[in-house]
Every structure is written in C-alpha cells, then in structure tokens.
Length: 429
Image 1 (cartoon, rainbow, N blue to C red):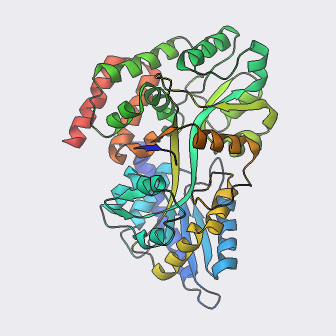
Image 2: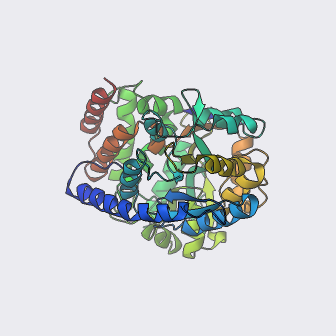
Image 3: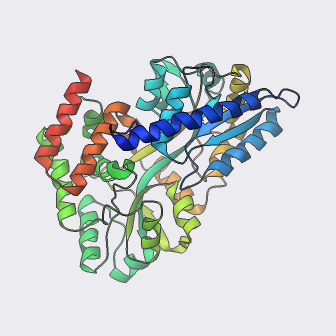
C-alpha cells in the first residue's frame, strides 16, 4: 500500500511445542478473563491481550491506559501479556472463535487484520470512525479499510528509518546521505574504519525482512508493493537486482553477524561505537536506545532516499482490534470511542512517544528528535509504504521471511527469488 502523506512460524518441533504452551497458557488465562468479566459493582473490566512483555516491555503502558480509561469512562482494563510473537499469535487465533475471546487485543495491520476479518472474528468499528471522520486523514482511513469496513483502533504510527552514531559520523567526516550512492559510500567509509555499518540478524526470526524492505523500497515503492501483493514476479530482473544489491552489501561486510540480538546487542554495539547505523522503527528511539543508556546527543536519523531521488518512508501501523465474540461488546465500543478521540489517542501514543494518528491530538509531548521526523514527513512529500510484516498476506509473508533468513546465511539471488516466486505462485493461484 502506498500513501502520500497528508509468526504462524514455519512448521517444526519448536513451533509445535510453543503452540502447545500457548494453548496451555490460554486455558489458564480464560479463568482470569472469566473472573475479571464477572466484576460488575465497580464497572466492567475489559481484557486486552498483547505480545509486548518482552523487549521492549510495554505492559506498564497498558496498565496506565486502563487507569486513564477508567478515569474517563468508568471502564477498566485487565492487560494480559505474552513475551513471544509466535506463542501470542497461536493463543489469539485459538481464543477468538470461542466464548473466551478477549475484548481487545493488539495485532498487526493490513494482511494480518484481513486474515481475521475474512473469518468473521472482528467487531466492525466503522461507525466510530465515521464519528471522528474530521479528525483522521483520508490516507489513514484508507490504510485501515478492509472491504469497505474498518476494524482497527489505531494506537499510534511509527516509521522505519536509519539511526546513525553522530560521534562516529563526526570522527569520519561523514554527513547524513542525500542519495542512495552517498549512503553506500558512507557504509564503505565506516567499514574501512574498522567499524560495522549496519545491523542485520535472524535471531527471533522476524527481523530478517528489515534489510529487504529498505533496499526494495529504495528501488521503488511500486516495485516493493507489487512484489508483496503478487502483481510482480520475484524472478523479474528488477526483483533479482534487489537481492543482488543485498548480496553485494553482505559480501562487503556491511552487516553485523546474523547471531546478534536486535534488542540487546544492537543498542550496546551502537553505544560502544562498534555499530554505526541501525535500521529501526521510530519506537526504537526511546525503548531501545535511550532506555538502554544511549545518550540522545549521540543519535541522529535519516530516511534513505529512493534511487530515483524521491522521498519515501516505511510506515508501521499499530492497531488494536476488538473480538466479535468478546463478552462486553457495548463497553468495548465505548472504550474504543474514547481512545479514538483526540484526548484518548494522545494518551495512547504518548505512552511510547509514538506519533498520534488523530489529526487533532496534541503532539507536543514528542521530543524534538521525533518532532523533526514528523515535520520532515509532513513537509517532504513522502511516499509511504506499509511495513513488509503487514504488507503481504500473513501465511505467505512468514514463508517468504524464512527465505530471507536463508538468504542472509547463504546469499544466492537467483535461487532465492525462484523459491520465493514458487511460494507466491502456490499461494496466489
């Protein structure tokens, strides 16, 4: 999806064991949900499930959101967190069809949401969006629309960019690049200085797509989207060239070892001046850099320009969905109504210093670093594409992301693009 601004995991023993654990945890959790929803004297308590108790840990934010909601509406939240994306995904998919479905849960946008919508598991929220139609841009509304309906409470928005170590850039006489060629020249200078230019890892599996989407979107936002949606063959020369460029960067030693941890090793290496640039979401700034002791004065950021010289950025939507089979539909809609208001949306986004989605929200809480990013996007005629994780049909995306992991370990553009295209043919046909 392009806007102009305004894990089922592969089959195997590990996943089978995680899925079993998820189902066991679900059975325990359902007892907690039943107990919470039984409370009536003090008002209704809604259960909200999320997968954000790992690194970074957002569970306290949901506790605070419940306190804010209770003060505004008398409705409380009972957050239930999971530390692992794959276990969480299995638990949610197991719970949604039955009477133990949570009232609210965090999820992923676009194809992930559509997968649940097609199975009639979500509560439509179009009427609430219509109430606030003057407060959300048409671009945002379009980004969340599925078959003419809206199902998401947009928690916040984040963008993917490159953080750079200002100390090292100054030491090497570098500046934020104004073109793809300048970006590659910076990588070369950093490597020649005995430091690592960029992060790349297959630990936890999901980060494997990070490098691909940056290179692909730089070659062209239409090309990137067409590959994700099956409109373009991965064996076309344009697509193969993406992987040829990726391989060249791997061969030149521009990346960290694929065994580093994105949430612990990468910030530490950055702070120690070993790693000079990090591809990351704007959420990474506070929860993984500042909170891990990296001084703000050390952090710069830039968006890689497209190879055509145009501005582009990758957007990561953060939706909260409502279960159609939840026990407290009426109060769930009241809670969503509040959090879609300018006041409520400001509170949600402020918790993580993310960008608010409601156009009337007060964004003054954003630090100068993020305000500069927001202004850059609003004033720079940026084309926005949806993050790879949400941009491709979920089942297929996980299979393709596994291929990215293989490519990082053994880069072969011709082989990997042929294998990815075979997966796409099987899915779309």
